[in-house]
Image 1 (cartoon, protein in one colour):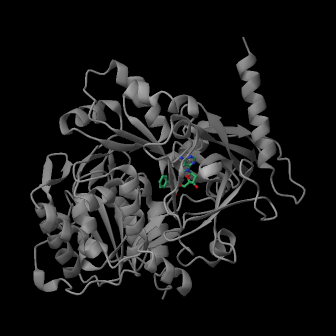
Image 2 (tube, protein in one colour; image 1 turned 90 degrees about the vertical axis):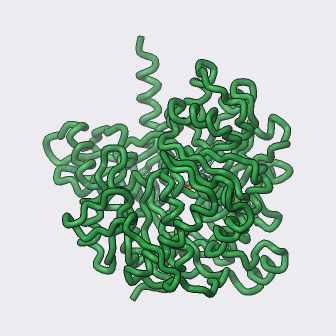
Image 3 (cartoon, helix red, strand yellow; image 1 turned 180 degrees about the vertical axis):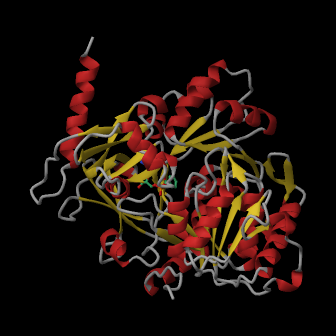
Length: 547
Ligand code: OOB
């Protein structure tokens, strides 16, 4: 038996958050049906060939809920959902909410190793996948997860379930049965969904978010980002990620009764025609994509004039690039600095230009407590760089079932140690200056150095490995693995190929591999990543100086 899924704030905090109206009785279980009642004929989702109204989506979610319960799943059970940007994502997820089941959101890029870890940690009873996406067949992977994770009983496939090959159930075979659906609402303080941490040390952690806390962040985000019933949100990034899901993202759009347009890919070639055709008003991008859009927009024949707000977040958007957004795209830039654990900062749409281009915004809530501290944990004055700690009405107090991570990641008085180094400016605006922990932010995808080092050390010829980030003009950061080998050196390409065979997300394969004879160590004998980074920078400079 693993621990029950919960998220607990101390009673005095919970009472205050309720009193101030942040936490309400609203839940995800009834969100969609209440929107269908309010604006049933409005188009909710445009995805591929589908164009579903709120009424149609709600009906599909009811069918999905009955289908999940007919499998024998019980309210409170966890279900890992790994789907790309397709319309069915919403039928599945709101079906799970309707049935009182708890989705665990995996990204389409995750592979066997990660999915098995999420399923195991969450003690999941089912996994929902798509048949194929971008050349990858998820069905054999799902079978392998099922073999590894004993509690995982069902695999539900959107698309061709390939029945007979494994133990798959086709999502399309689910049938409506209102008799199976629970008619009492869930408790708003219960966990509604589980997000996955970017992962700074070791494997990703599970982030349980409650109905009340997540919905508060969504309602408040809608107000800050101007999301209304008239909005059209383009889901450019994978919707399972916290940013496009809730800042305000697709859940914000549903909350507002707006329209969601699913972009199968975030490239200008795919996104620009959709913006023109659907009259998209708002979207969210990571910095490398924003750069691509900026490059492509002047040459594009598509009319992008409907776009009012371009959100950029997940990694630092450099001021030089930020300054180009309004003149070149004709829309307002909104910087978004958030984390799946909770705290989200936004520049406001009516902020002065220099705030919008030079800062990563300020917190959503007046009750977001933001502390910037030095090594000793003491507050530093505004303008000075320090570690960002936070606590508030939608920031978790603990990861699920991970006492080690909880001890490291939270202070005794409940502040989450974000691992980010920031400067606070007057007015509460934050400027992100870097990371205190060893993770690589590769175009918004977070990679734990430790997790990759673990994989590398499993290689028969690798004696030791250290992974660091290297600045990259396009990706922001890329990964470099320093390795010490026993005996003859294999080729870097061989190590990369071997890494691919470890069934991990492709973005985690080191971009660069450097063979060394030894590592410098810090005073306490830890590998000095600082020294390795400096060495790399030296190499880069040397390379640049060559004629
Ligand atoms: C978002 O969430 P995660 O959980 O994938 O990653 C959180 C980390 C932050 O701690 C920070 O290191 C980095 O990503 N980050 C940024 C940033 N936004 C996120 N670093 C610099 N500038 C930014 N604008 O990435 C996320 C969640 C909700 C909304 C937006 C992003």
